Length: 401
Ligand SMILES: NC(=O)c1ccc[n+]([C@@H]2O[C@H](COP(=O)([O-])OP(=O)(O)OC[C@H]3O[C@@H](n4cnc5c(N)ncnc54)[C@H](OP(=O)(O)O)[C@@H]3O)[C@@H](O)[C@H]2O)c1
Image 1 (tube, protein in one colour):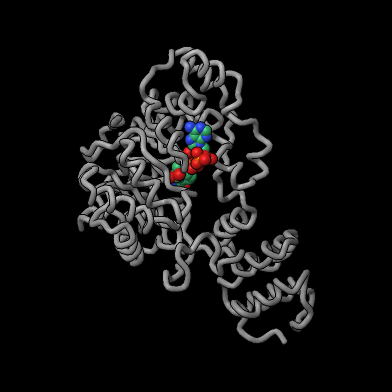
Image 2: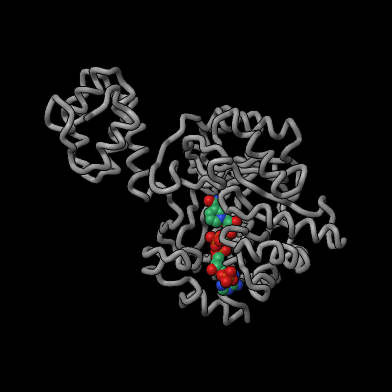
């Protein structure tokens, strides 16, 4: 059964129900994608970060070889990872991803997060993930959204992608992007479910002609399997009395009700399932209608509760905070600032603080060190060893020992 489509602002039709590839196991991905195409899925939502684009492409290739579909029948989506935001890296990455998929163009290419991280060469680690060293070090990048978006626009001009869009952007950032965009984003992909309705953001997207794709339509479900405590502590939407009762009334599953609640309000959905029965169930979730009152009842479950929120990770949060401070800091304020930063006792915080301070001239760096160590001659570690090592290897102009 083919899903209905949504007309995008670039004139293309996007299937309203697609298949999400995050956490689809590598060893089953090709088979699952192939079977999903057989079941009727036409949109696949991938990303560099999911680490399974080669296998997803193999599933697509097999389906095309067997004559199940042609390339033009499919709507293949991928995303630019945070470490490739620099203008000279965007095309390089997009071409690598196309090669991985074994295709010549993406139907849609999104900025995955509005967060620029320092470049990691694919030969070092791919996908690079969040941490520069592959363990726990966050290094922010310098690319602005404008710079990245302009590079994304070039992908359209070169025919590597048919449309470009954004993901995990909030309203003010979208408004800013629209000021300079020559090519408007065709879609906005966001976490969206009855616990996180975001009516204001949806209104803005509608007013600007940007289609919205909901991810994590089942709320905590996707994060429970990651063992995230916040998700485990949240009642499952599948067990919510309102959802269960509406599902019973329509003789549908709670999953289908959650998907229909989104699609009936004009959003696209991209549920992930590694189970053939459930993926079929999800695709057929457009074959019934909820009553307006039921839609309102479900929307009223809103808790403004977000699971996929990288700045929730304290190091990232602080990193953003530092970026803000670095704009305001004058060398003459360094002592004051450094003392203030000392309030953050976790090594990760202090390490990032040092990174901020290093932006300024040598005297400033040394005075920062004096404050951090409590003495003018470096040699005694402050707080713990980790801080000291990081300062030594990256930022100080002379050895600490
Ligand atoms: N742009 C972004 O930053 C971003 C972030 C997150 C996700 N996404 C995209 O959105 C897609 C979907 O989001 P998601 O993966 O977070 O979660 P989701 O689709 O809301 O939930 C997936 C979970 O629900 C289960 N499930 C699927 N269908 C079910 C059904 N009918 N009944 C009961 N359980 C069912 C799956 O288990 P089984 O596999 O065992 O069925 C899995 O545990 C992702 O795959 C990805 O493509 C994008």
